[in-house]
Image (tube, rainbow, N blue to C red; front, side):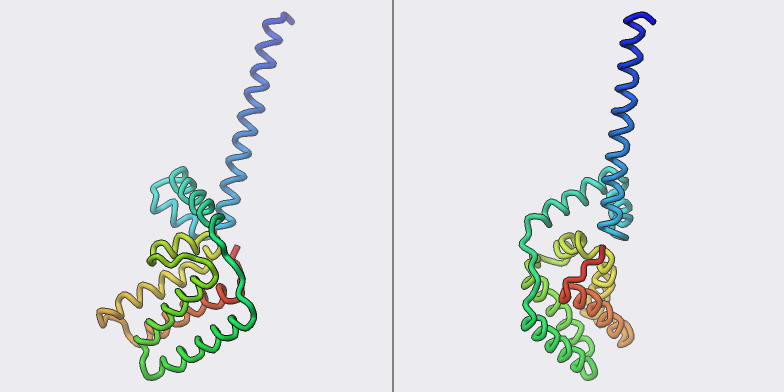
Length: 180
């Protein structure tokens, strides 16, 4: 075998190894994002119109989330939030629409106290998606009912379902159970 043939074989082998390494790294990153974001991964792909744009967005969410000072609540504050939630639930019997508003406000207050910025619904969804991607559909469903309720378009059963949805996110945020 001549020297030039040997060089071509070695260069080709190095290129193949590099291609395999890059492919495995990209697949590993994709698996990481799918596992971390759960159903939010597919939603991002649909919203962004493709894998690359979605993954770029999800990595940006991770980077933003890493800069946040997310903290657990001390037991006393968890108890206070639980007591307040129970009051909101009791209030539902007499004032369902107002209770849904109170539930949304309480979830926002809990998010703030945990260290999540609460600068609007879209921002909250973006920030929650990193650690709570599997529970985020509850938040979206509750928010949608609340929005319709503001215009008098939600039934009592829909408002009850919104409370259940808010409760799922509330419980996860309160107990620091991440849905990875």
